[in-house]
Length: 308
Image (tube, rainbow, N blue to C red; front, side, top):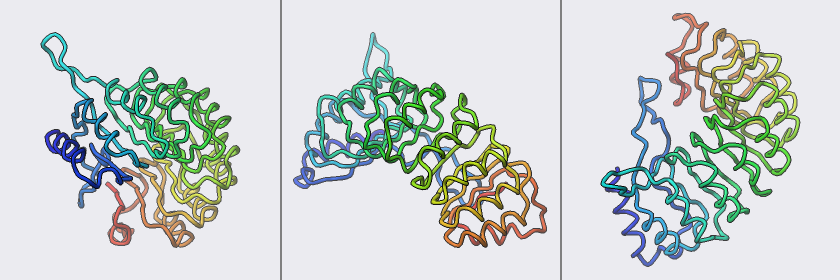
């Protein structure tokens, strides 16, 4: 909660081991938490911190390599009212450049936009892992991403267009993980262009919500045999596509395939047989299963299996 986050940051600034701390994550871990017996449970996301706390924390922990403020917001008084002050969340990152910082998680930081983010990215050109999920960033921020970036999550960033994706393809040659799920302005051709560019180096690709059918999926899979995590939820992929994933992605560990319309138990069985390393399977709200087809067995086999 807010009090716990605030107290923790004040405490951290005074402990002797802060100067050697390499990883700090506050706020929230995810918008969803596992809840056995249900699909997902929404968690109140925002943790409020004061800008001075962030500034002093960064100065007290100069060796930080990983920083996460997911779901955090700063609040400041204005004319007797309290308002979210999102700019102040990021200003300390501009004023306190940390050459060690390689991972920055700003998912769902309240109202963050290009004006706030671009100076941070221009200051920390050496970032390798960046999460901006659910923020108001657009192509302007993507145009200044550093060349060392390997992992990028911009899912649910609805202001992003194909121009922004083209900037990533041109400027970030080392991308291994790219989550584009539920960006409303992107088409199936976007996922294909990503696969064509990065090919077998991709280990995670998310394009949930795209208007993609089995043919589009097969074109992506033909270039990305090294995928370990794939997100296709809310697409037009059917059981045929699921079977193709099994035959083409032997290293697959996690498949997010919720809200598909024509998924058969036979296709899932084929996937499981061909992907022995699979541990996460999301089939929430999929259509095509019959009650007698052994869904209970799948739930027992996969701790993160979800099906409604």
